[in-house]
Length: 338
Ligand code: FAD
Ligand code: EPU
Image (cartoon, rainbow, N blue to C red; front, side, top):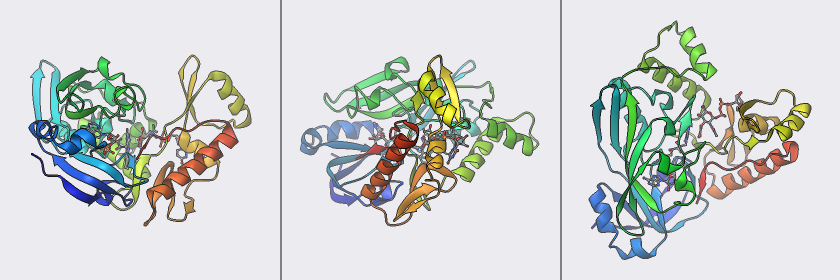
């Protein structure tokens, strides 16, 4: 039976580095340990919180239940012609998996280099960056049903992926613990260079025919230039999603703000850059007590040292109000609020 520790600090286990305690805490290293834990009274009765790398969470309070840290390791692969099926344990560090694939020349996730967090969390919000979303390479996952104690397999369609979203954030929120994910990668490399800064950076390095590693290196360099490193300044990446508005609303806003950064994504759908909206409201680089927004990316809220989760949450509420008032656009939090 996995050992349950009592009153454990989660400050080092969330990338915002805010203080919070879990009433009960355990680490899961194998699927078998999950089956054992299922028989524990705390697992049966208490609220559960599944923790990966804690890089997409904001603790605004202590967690009065059982926090289960996913630590199932291991990476295996199976080749079938040009396809490579790579399977990784839910506790594998995402960037370690990316490096494994880059080093073996398995193409498909190099644009997702340096995203913090774990393999098990990667389908939850369908992680995405620099022109690629997880749903493009996700094959299937194994997940432990906390209600029945059984294992279920989800294929790509069953996950209902969309921008920063999946079934695990809606109908099945909190129901499954993802223990393993299989990605369908390729031996054939077709560079995805749609995000302008990648081509520019490759050009400035004099690279005409990039390798998988070149793209990974360039993406990592761009990320480092824009985003704060959670090892030195607490944050959880983008705090809000980029909002989507209808064409009529977009035209109204654009008539007042002609420079608005936007991407047409459908007949009646325009995605707006939340970072731009927040910057226009005067928040970029602003310091508010112990909190603030990042100087190079207004979409990233940061902990300047001793912030509590509540303070960061309050800052996010002020930003939502201000963007609503200026543009009539509602920002939705991307980060999971506990
Ligand atoms: P956690 O924060 O631990 O958990 C996130 C959610 O998933 C919680 O609801 C948790 O309960 C649930 N969960 C975690 N593991 C499991 C599991 N095994 N089974 C079931 N539920 C689980 N995200 C992007 O998409 N693109 C980016 O470019 C990006 N850049 C970032 C940059 C920085 C500097 C930071 C700090 C974060 C960034 N993020 C980005 C957000 C974050 O990295 C991702 O959301 C990541 O997938 C979170 O992984 P995690 O293991 O830390 O999840
Ligand atoms: N912008 C501003 N001011 C800012 C920030 C951005 O004007 O302070 C403008 C930029 O100039 C650019 C546009 O907004 O024209 C978009 O900015 P950027 O390319 O930095 O990307 P983003 O839309 O802000 C999204 C993801 C990131 C991901 C990057 C790269 C969301 C919510 N965020 O950010 O994901 O890394 O694209 O693909 O979709 C995360 O989810 O945590 C995350 C970091």
